[in-house]
Length: 252
Image (cartoon, rainbow, N blue to C red; front, side):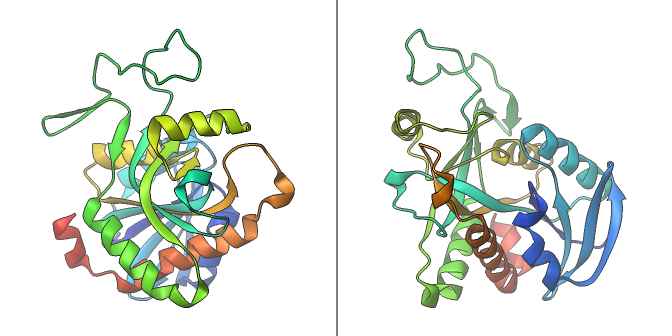
């Protein structure tokens, strides 16, 4: 397959707006999953719905990467925003790092940070990675600039910051405040650490762009807006792809 961008989301709703504008779209089955190939603007893309959670994400992305290595991975979709981040429903978060909050050594006290693992789960060069996976600083900066410019008239706030990956969705204010105090994260989702880990393993530039469908904390689903978050995250990814030049990857 020609040089392409792999765009992933957990469920179809999170990526259907991008799929609808992809030209010369055709479906292929890879790793037991349906993927779509085509063009967005001038960029060749492969669109992948991984299924929710890190295990699904890693399986689906590994199959695609082994089939044809992309020049970049963009993960998108919805997320919960932390109140303290300043983000609101519909706003955009861009990950500077992904933090797997479940990797570590349990503390004897509840709601306190896990102690660091005594071993690396992944190494990048001479750096031992234990639970935090850095994203491309240059790409996140370029994406932020492109998205801010493209969405300026829509009054959508855009912020870069750490994301946390959870397996259990936060559903209490106490837990939300505890997570923010530990990690100063702007968003919570379920797939990012798996995707970031895999991107580092395969040495592929990684960018994560999400929109807030809800605030992290007490589950008040009547206040959620999944449709808005899906539309806005897709607008943000499109804004970046429209500004994208392969030369951007040399500095990532």
